[in-house]
Image (cartoon, rainbow, N blue to C red; front, side, top):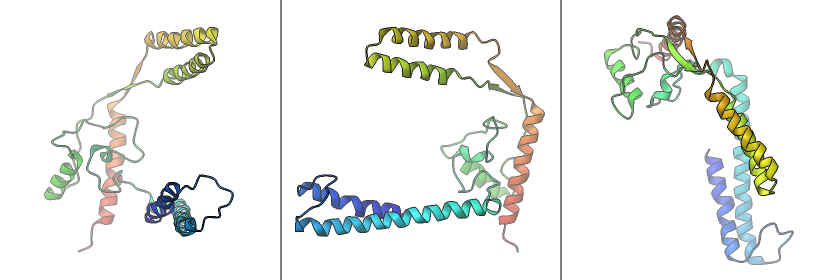
Length: 213
């Protein structure tokens, strides 16, 4: 991160100065001595960026090689404060097994702090209910396809194509609106099973991180 951010400023800020001094972009060569120091600084910044790229590649290699040892089981690897960190990683199809009680802007942080004070895991097992979920639909993709065709046709004044694309987008909306089955249910038993697996993994991870007395 630091090589990237530092290298970016060191590489590009001198180029702004060179632009004010009259240097244009993508020059094959230059013969203005006053530009040379600034270009050397920019080259050094490019070197810093190169180091940052190398470190990022190394990070990816290490992360892939040690993925089993480094895999997060809590869903909250950075001790987050908001509710998106309260789910498993990867998350299930539903957002929450039970809708959490929100008592502030940093709801999950408050839940964890209260659990820490009580020396328990965040949240006891709740009463699970069946969750209703929307079915997957290709409507958005199909409408985007027709919209792309329509945009192309409008630019080039191909009016028959505009009409066909508009009709296709409208027909897609009509078909979507008249669907008979637009939702499905995840049984309470399946919700409970998934949440218990997540709670067990989270409890195991916390036990491993707990200092030995």
